Structures are given as C-alpha cells and as structure tokens.
Length: 360
Image (cartoon, rainbow, N blue to C red):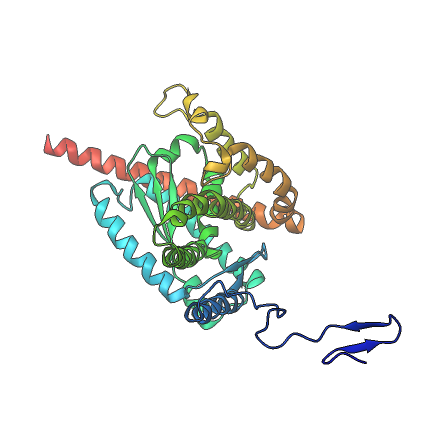
C-alpha cells in the first residue's frame, strides 16, 4: 500500500517525503533585513539623487575637454569673487601700489594683451551661453600688492592679484605673461566653481556619515582621506590645467612660451633676479621646503618643467603661426609700448624730484 501523503517514484522504487508545510520545521526561513524600512527609502532616494546630480551637472573644461562636476552658476561665482575682491582690497589697502607705479603699469600692459587672447581662446574652444558670456566678458582687474611674498592668484570675476615678491623671479614681459596667463586660465576653466562644487558634495557625504555613525569614527577617517585622496589631487590637476591653457594664451598673445620654463626654473632653484644693482641671490632653502608632491596643492617644479617640455611644440606652433609674421609685428608694438612707458616713468620721476626740490 502507498503511504499517506507520500508519492512513489517508479525509477527508484522509493517514497519521497511530503513537502514541508508553511511554517513547518522543513521550511527555509527568509534572512532578516539589515536595514529597517524607514532607512531604506531615504538611502535609495539619496543615492538616486546623487547619481542624477552627477550626470546632470557634468561640465567640460575648455581646451582640455576634462569632464568634471560643476554645481555652481556663473552668476554665483561672479558674486562670490566680487565679495572676496572687496574684502581683500580693503585688507591690503595700505599695500596696494598706485596705478601709475611702474610695476602696476607693466602688469596692466601685459595683462591687457593676454586678456584679448582669452576672447580668441573662448571663441575657439568654448560654446558660451548668455550667462557664460557675462561671466567671461568681465574686464580683468589687476591689484599689485607690495609684499615679499612670491605669489599671484585670481578670483572669479577676473580679479588678479600680484605680490611684488614675484618680480624677484621675473626678468621680462614674457615671463610675467607666463604667470598672468596661468591665473587667467583658472578663470577660463572655472576652477573656483569646481572647487566649491566638490566642497558641497563632500559636505553632503560627511553629513551622511555623521547620520550613519553618530560616534564620528567614520567621519574622523573620512576628513583626512578626502584631503589626501581628493582635494590635493584635484588641486594639482587644476594647476596643471592652468599651466597648459596659460601657455596657449601666452603664445596666442605673442609672448614667448619658452619663458614659462625660465621663470619656473628660477623658482625651483631659488634664483632671484638682481635688484637695484645687487648680485643675484640663490636661496637653496626654497627647494628643500617643498613638501612631497602628493601632499602639495601644486605639482612639483620638476613635474611642471617636464609638462612644459611636452607642450612646447604645440605652443611654438601657435607662436610661429603664419610664418611668425603676426607675432613679429605684435612684438615690435610691444617694444614700442615699453619705450613709451619707460619715457612716461622717467618724466614722472623727474616731476616728483622737481617737486621735492621746491619743498626743500
């Protein structure tokens, strides 16, 4: 007789056991969920929002074509840069050189010629919207600060600051153009907005970690990891990009692109240009004080000089376009402008000397 609730298998001549009943001992239990339902929905929503935002706010850097996240609008960057400009000019009010100072005149002259090349650059490598046009068409301002600090930087809105300590390593207008072109490139690539966008994203991740782990253990690991693995590499990437675009701008404006290697080579060696008839000074400590590249916001001088070598043939082809005739003509105009500026400087110095004599 067949046993109750069992089926007979003719091939094996054996009875198979009955299927387990719901909730019975033979049923395999479902694994419990690790997250409560009230956390799953917000987590999925946040993840989906991040993925959507990443692709929606993707942008492309002009010329280099690098893809990056850009959350800020051009108008927001303009407002941010203008506010910082007002704060810095107020802070350095006593140290800002007058517009008729020889250093100010030189920076304005070189900067104006470079600024004209930025318009050519943007027409060729960037499709501007109306909002972008307002951002990129702002005139450049040049603030020269009396300081031994060797530095120059730019704010969104085309505000360039130059410290006079930089002139210890600059011999001519070509070398000054290498520095100013680098700063202008930061604006054209909107590196300021990109940094701000990255900070916003990392702040969101930090808050999410704080929510997941109120003990802040994960957050204490997250902060230094972001610094070394994201912020510093991105900063170095921006500097490399600005070096590259700046070299193109200088070449387009008919400044000798080979000067970039000279000025950064001088900084690497700590070789200062003789001032007021003094002998050249070499500061060996400058190179020793440079941190390892992976802990620095800037590439090492060796990396930068190697990059210039890699880009130089491209830059020289721009500089020597049309058989070099265009740049030969423009450089003659530059020489004439320097003569006029020098004569104006001498006239002003003589006038000041005459006034001092009359006071005496």
